Image (cartoon, rainbow, N blue to C red):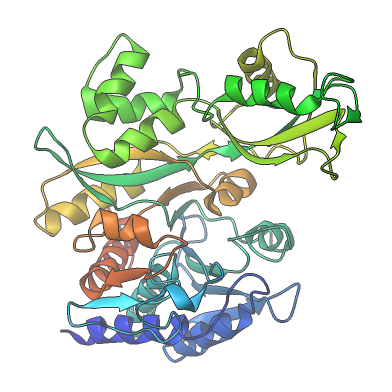
Amino acid sequence: MTTLDDEVVGLARDIIRLDTSNAPGNETLVARHLADYLQEAGVECELVARDPDRANLVARIPGTDPDAESLAFVGHIDVVPVDPRDWTHPPFEAVIDDAGYLYGRGAIDMKGEVAARAVAMKELARSGWRPRGDLWFLAVADEEDGMARVGMNWLLEHRPDIRPHHSVNEGGGEKLELSDGRLIYSVGVGEKGTYPARITALGEAGHGSTPTVGDNAVPHLGEVLTRIGRGLPEPVAHPSVDAMLRVLVGEYDDLADAIAKASALHPELEHLIPAVAGITMAPTMVGASNKRNVMPSRAWVELDCRIQPGMTEADVEAAVRARLGEGIAYDLTWPEPLIPGGASPHTGPVVDAIASFLVAEGVEADLLPSIGTGFTDSAYLRAAAGTAAYGFTPFFTTPLDVMIAGYHNADERIHVDDLHASVRFHLHLAKELLGEDGLDAGGPA
């Protein structure tokens, strides 16, 4: 292994061992460790915090041209809670097994990526690299929950100077070997938003011993659930979905048919493609009477509605009411405000740099511009700064099923070779976008 290979594995292990389970978070532990690491090479670092225990790291290599475009390496340093009883190796000991897998909470999501971005930045700084535009590194708190408003959402409000033109975050780089023989690597170009709904079925209260007296709302809720089903969406034409489908199946005339063909190309696409093709309405929470012998007049279900970029409250309400149809008495309310989805262009400097990196690595593959079904902090960057925000780190070695099984689950792990590759990618990306020594990515200034 090279020195950088050792360095990224060591840093990843260091920060995995710092327990930043959210809640409570305690992200300052990792933010301070990363700051100390980067400052050894002279990188400008600040801990920016609303809560002293939940700091964000803001680091920067300043550019030589204040008008040049800038790039941010982005990552969150909190992790989801863990039950150590379910793990092969203790989740905060950062064990590397004989096959080369680094185990630990955050190995995939996303302290491994954070470590790679930090190592790349330090290597650029100590090599004397001078970019034309600013290179930022934002290691932020509270991504896994977001409700404390101490992470990216608060940071961008508090620091209007942090407005990168481009960014790379989590949410892409998965390798898909399609059934037609093609190799695909995903590039996260956007994420769906959220607008949860509560449907309250209406009836009339009564005593549980006489079921025909009154009008128990629970059977009415059963009808609501039948109509909602599993919550898969009706397909809706959308530019981001169209871009995915054209890579997978080429030109098409029938949206539903294209979704079916694309979904059949890989087991992961079987779940992803239908879910991003419209508004999902997964029923996840239910409630009714608080006493067994009382038939309730109201019974409710909450739907985890995930919405395509650009959709409004009115779009979601229309879709939910259309799914419910007629003949049920219900109230429809909204427990939380809409958090919009967002998407970046499917082409551009970051996507070009990803493609050229794969070529440099000898990888022959197509890029799939993908919309994530979950949330990342890239949404805040797009909203606040108009950042062309993407998700990518190369997963050349860690199998897709291992990655998926580890997200928010036991035995989360990443192969160390992918940490090495991620450092190479981020070095390549920074030099391609920001240039070096007075040269931009395209040649002489």
